[in-house]
Every structure is written in C-alpha cells, then in structure tokens.
Length: 151
Image 1 (cartoon, rainbow, N blue to C red):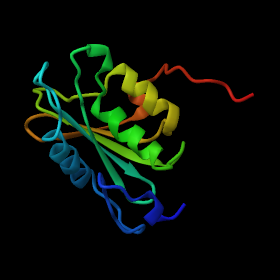
Image 2: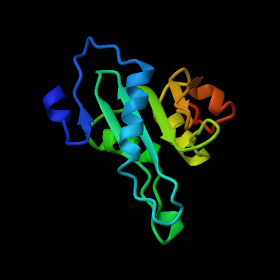
Image 3: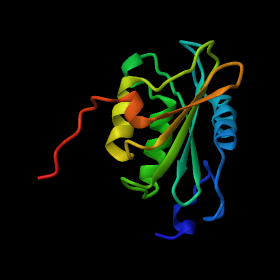
Image 4: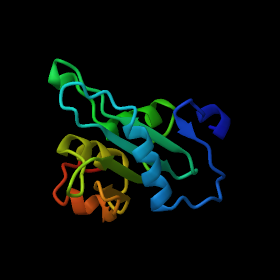
C-alpha cells in the first residue's frame, strides 16, 4: 500500500526518513485532546500514534451516555490506523495526554488492544499537566498481558 493510499484527514504526513521526537508526538496528543468529546466526565484525553512509515494518527476519547459505548483516545487512533490499512507491527510509538497531576497511562482495555497490534518493546509516552514526559515500554504497562500462542 502506498503512502497516498493511506492518507486521511486525521493523519500528519512525515517523510519516511524523519525521526519524530517524543516531544513532537506528545504535542500532537495534546493538540488532539482539544477535540475530545467528554461531556460526562469532563476528562479530555488525546493520543498520537506514530507509524513506522512516519505518519501520525491522532485520537480522542469519545463519550456516550451509555458509558460502555465510550471509546478511549488510544483505541480511536489505533482503530483509525487499522481502518486505513495498517497491520500488526506497523506501530512505532504512542503518546497519551490528559490534564492530570500524575502520568496518565492507558486503561487496561487500551493496553490489551496495544498488545494485540504492537511490539512489547514499543515506547509509550505519558505526560501530566506540567508537560513532563515519561517513557515506558508496552511490556512495562502490561507485563502479564493476554496473548495467544502461534500454533
């Protein structure tokens, strides 16, 4: 699939040779956070998912009165990338931004979705309201993740 075939309105185009810094990725997550739909919790979250080809997909939390129908920012970004044709192994890093006093990790459902499609060594960048950034690996967040065995 070519870069042009994967382009959508919610991606940021980067050259294949550009190395996107954690600060740039986090800035994209912070910018996305402003578009969250959080009328019930008033807790906007933004995510920016870096693809191996340099594209960045943003996602936001989208709430619903039926709380189970709510979707998190991380899954919004992931599902959009998958809908655009990306597959397991195409994901390079993710940044997650919220307005919190401590670092904001993904929920366990999002962790499991990340485990399904991403390397255990994929960087996960977290931030808090002072804009500091903490780097973890996916395996740090999900040391005992549910995985299926290749048969």
